[in-house]
Image 1: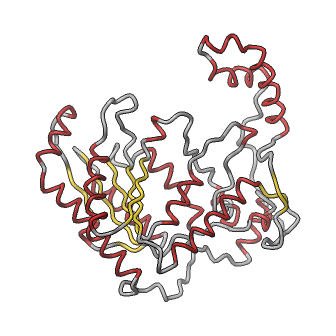
Image 2 (image 1 turned 180 degrees about the horizontal axis):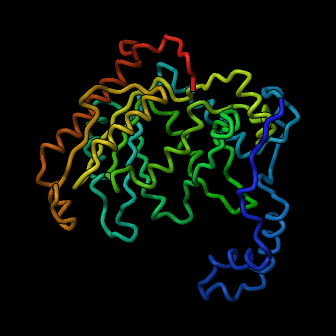
Length: 357
């Protein structure tokens, strides 16, 4: 069956002059002037890669483990996939130490414009101490590093799943795109850290009634963990026709991160904490993670309607919220232990859903 693939939205490729401006935009420091000839040569190479569409300059034959063994797979994607497979194996071994991924979702830290650490980071340290006291390995993922690290990115999701779920590959194959300069994407490392975790604890402030920008970027890029295709050769990379046919033939929407426990801490100063907490819990529930109980789902105001300038002092004085964050971590540690021992389950997981999506 042939499907009508709707096109006509994308803008045309950049003209040479526009590409020149964009390429040189990152070399405005006068110190680069001495290398003008070198930059010109590099620009010519980058222009050729852009016009040729060399998204993945290094490839390898897929091999017998894939539907099309002769397909040219990106070596970067293949290596990321191989790490996830090995990590998932270790995750399932009883001898592997219990691990919780603690995610600091504030974009603020003292290494960038604000010049001060976030309250979220301070709360994460409370959680970390509680988890470590319960003999849990803690992997601290600080998403504020995309605002302070050199050339570190979580590139936005391109919405492949909305064309057809099999077009969304696990792990994401949209990046890096070397032809378009969309590189230094953090997500392959982040996927591996999620897969390694027996529990996940998200701590986030509320920005305009919603989650923060770094958290939303990560969330959207996690869509491939919920139904994503582990074999890009079945869609010949990004062929929408093949992906649509594959989905309509019967797609099982695999939940690649199911079976991990989670906890949530949402804080704010004026409004929006309850809606943010609910949306995060709904998201993790949908992906097949298991909540660690009511005490592991926390939303609280810190310095309610007080000045931003004294918000850290408000946290200093709010001993109750500090203890509540510790309780979230303790509840999550307990859930991880019971989950791994087979004493905790998600009721209803054995039931067949009439609508998989």
